[in-house]
Length: 110
Image (cartoon, rainbow, N blue to C red; front, side):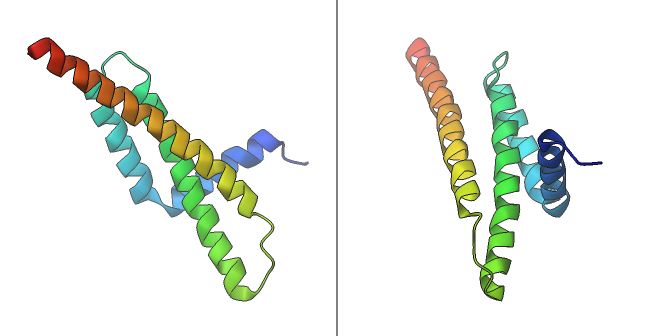
């Protein structure tokens, strides 16, 4: 039986988490911190999503290093670039929301 794209993608995330549990845990901790700073928003979920992308990207980077070391042509760099762009944009949105919220708090206190 052939696996679906969704199943393959889920398997890729699971493999990455298994290979990088400390990073996955750090992202979970970060999402809790964001939740405490921005209660009632979806920011913590966004941080968890960005963490999943980061961990998967790390796995892809390691595979790419192995391919390059063995002399195998790299045909997957575009996948990593795509994930990196999504990560950067997503984290930027979270950081900006945190900064804006902090600035509003400061204005309210002054």
